[in-house]
Length: 141
Image (cartoon, rainbow, N blue to C red; front, side, top):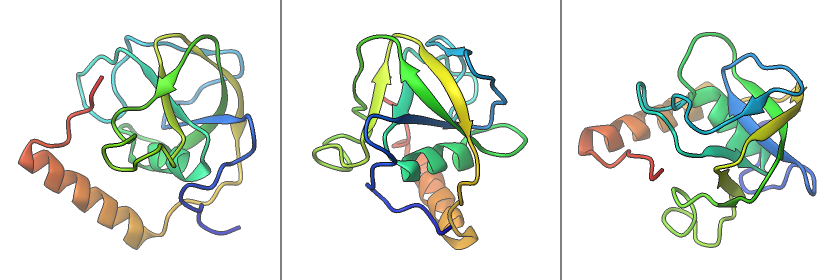
C-alpha cells in the first residue's frame, strides 16, 4: 500500500473519522467532547470525511498518546460541509469533509492504512504551528 491520495473518495457512501482514541463498534461520537486538535476546547460538532487522506491526517495530527486510528462511521442525523476546509482552503469541498451536531456511530476500525511520509507529516505540523503563531489556526465550530 502507498500513501493516501488527496481528494480520492475511499469508497462510495463510506465515511471515516481519524483520531487517536481507542473506540469500539457501536460507540457514539457526540458533540461536546474535547477537540482532537485544541486542548481544552469542547466541540459543538463531530467531524468526518469520505476521503482516506483526510482521515489519515486526522489520525496522525490528533492530540494524545498512542497510534492514530481510523474508524468507519455512520452519521445518525443531518450533516453539512465542514466550513473549515470548504471554500476557505479547498473550494467545492474536494476533501469531502463534513460535520454534524448529531452522533456518529462507529461501525468498525479501518486497519492496514498507510500514513503520510515523515517529511510530509513534519511539513504539515510546521505549517499548522505557523498558523497557530499567527493566530489563524482556530477551528470554526
